[in-house]
Length: 85
Image (tube, rainbow, N blue to C red):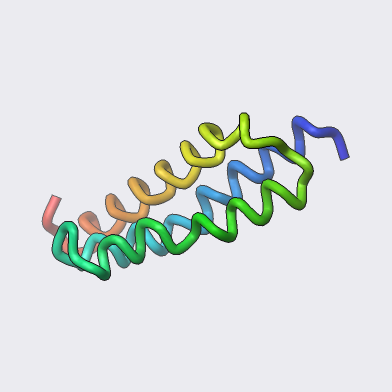
């Protein structure tokens, strides 16, 4: 597979993994253990996938951006569903 396609898939996977965690994070009080847990739990998996795909550390900002976008989308979906936008 072409490296660019692999990179795009990795970024989208980081986003998709973090949507449910962002949703769950929204129900926790800010800066509690649960909040930190939901923010950081996907990071080891994303690092593992990035290394297995053969990408260097230089692409961390791209995968991190996908993870942050997933957290934001998940939080938005939680707020929208529970009516506290």
